[in-house]
Amino acid sequence: MGTKNKAAITPTREQDYAQWYQEVIKAADMAENSPVRGCMVMKPWGYAIWENIMNQMDAEFKKTGVKNAYFPLFIPLSYLEKEAEHVDGFAKECAVVTHHKLEKDKDGKLVPAGELAEPLIVRPTSETIIGESMSRWTSSYRDLPILLNQWANVVRWEMRTRMFLRTSEFLWQEGHTAHATQEEAVQRTRQMLDLYAQFVEERLAIPVIKGSKTISERFPGAEDTTCIEAMMQDRRALQAGTSHFLGQNFAKGSNIRFQNEDGQEQYAWTTSWGTSTRMIGGMIMVHSDDDGLTGPWHFKRPIPSL
Image (tube, rainbow, N blue to C red; front, side):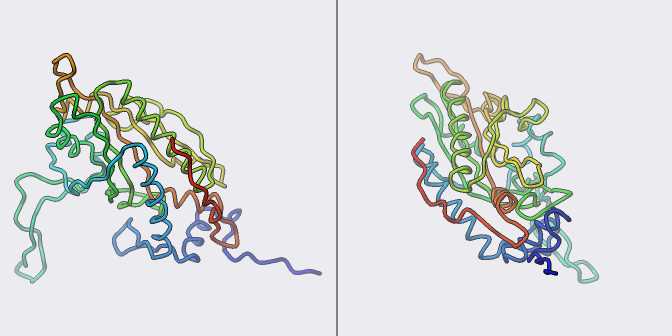
């Protein structure tokens, strides 16, 4: 009798899909858990994939007029409080800095000292602090549109984590734009969703479905949240990117106002959109098998300009 071939990865996908996923990452030497709960160390091979995604996606952003910038990791609590629905949506996931130094206690242990006048939030997303900058940069319709993106890390204190898919700290890009008209902001929201869909399908070889989230699933403070969803081998959908039409909600909270062509003062219309290292997790789950990591390494053709 012939012997049954043994899979390189155990357990197999059929036996335990969640554990199979972790074992593929381990066997490919992509990442490992860190000493900090819920966080991961991206090893060179795993980070190289993220670098390729960053470089190629960044080039596509710039074709649409987007420019890169960088904003602080720390956000004053009062900024989040300006947009009540937004802060409510992220309140349970926020990491908060309350002190600015450490001192030794009587037993020689380091303890927090120097309480801050105002707590600082480690950014879960940057709408509020970027909006503050936009409010200072905008006075006339001639200053619009503002088309920004930043490549950064964010922190959302997750209870259940899994490498690349959901970690307390993760890497992403977040785009933020301000416009003179509602129509222009809606068009940008759709344009970036289309860009994400084309990028994931053409570069990562992952089919996606585009659509809008239900009201209960919308980004906190948004008027509409659009997303791309991809089907994994375990027949579960993975959200691979989102693009939000924020209306004038954040502009009112951050006081992003301008004079239109008729000399009337009005609030700007804003958007935000983002993807993250979750795309790597999706790539693993779509392409890999019981023998280990497989990816769309042959997908090298450029994406046509949108």
